[in-house]
Image (cartoon, rainbow, N blue to C red; front, side, top):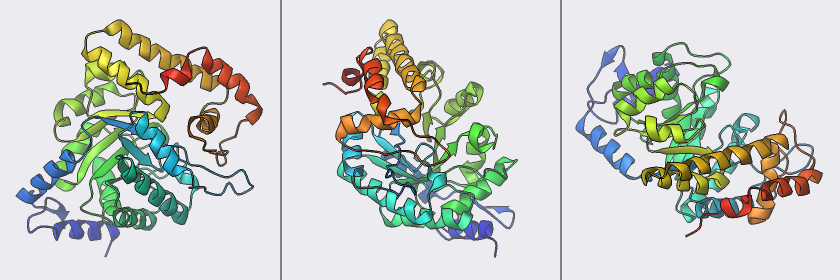
Length: 349
């Protein structure tokens, strides 16, 4: 029996009338799926401020995984205004880790999220479907709130149905957990319209409840929020964040770095209050600070902040990403001081 067919059958046995394709036949969505979706959406934060944390590695030849600092990282994220943690995403270098390492990392983050009132989404994506299924099953066992996956990459899918086949297979490891689609076409090279994906998933994959939208296609984002904003958790990643307020805010934002949560929340408040100059100033501050990090090595430089934030050494990234020389720390911190970074990256009041 194929993996895709197994996924469809697993879904079909959840109810006598589950809305999936089995041998080419579509069965209508039962009332209990609608109730399940309503409950699952109601269990999510009303404002999903998403943090995709860097994974801590030791400064040794193997860059071995270190999880001892994750409780402090989660506490720091929650204090910054983060409400959602996306575990083992691109910034966490999921593609560099073994299944065993990802399980260890996921378990540490899910536990820390529970202790700090954070909604946890475990990213299970990989090109190896049995591994993705195993990670989804493990995510359910450890009590994660939701699971997620990128589409196929390297050998990409070319149609919406092919992507849903892949996602259904991943979801078969935990078929009744809320599922998030990780839309990042510039990296995966799987190019599709999210609005089309969600329209098809309405009947084929009812547990697909959310999207992490990392794309500059504003036409697709507008079409998606215009149709699915009340029925799905849609989270917007592109810059500037201000554009989403006018085009369609969705349910939240993808900040990646937790230290940008306070400026986003201030920006959002200013916009809703009609204070556009103040909202623009927050967006400009984010651009200015991002430019500082870029000039010092980008994400590798950002890893240096957490010793000062919460006494956690994230260590260097794994290859092929290159580490920065820690001797840049004084110059980096001095450059950030010019923008009052340490005060503005804290949530006040």
